[in-house]
Image (tube, rainbow, N blue to C red; front, top):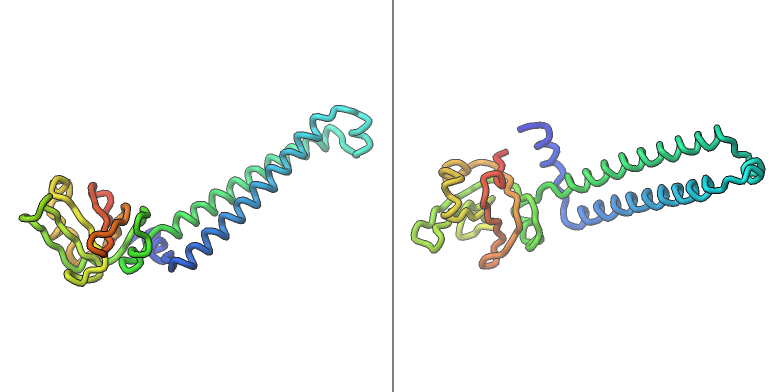
Length: 193
């Protein structure tokens, strides 16, 4: 397991804390953008005024204007870096949820992590699905990954590949008979940890 995967696993938040952290980060980012845009408007407004008398009265010189340009440029770069870091933190905070938490995220695209406890290839069922039950086996499953028969050749033998392994699956969470599930169409949606 890579350091990045360990870090992503450790960033599991419960729903309320995650929303609080996300909202707080967005508020800080919005405040920083307001400050920068206000700074840029003031700078643009003052640099348009060419009156030498006004410049002298305000104590501005050409050198001072160049310093202001440099400060404004540095401010934009700094704020851009802060916003990028904050948004990446939000992305990582949303990185994964547990199988038990999936029921609270129906309709959302998410990454759900857990151990594949049981698998089943339903050869006689419509669409020939393969089911990977995460954290609890059928009939008490709390989350299921569904691989339809038409996509099965892409996965090889998912029953043997994933059984007993800790995996993370990414996709839109839906409900089937009150059990949350994600349909995996591509092997890239399922990562073995």
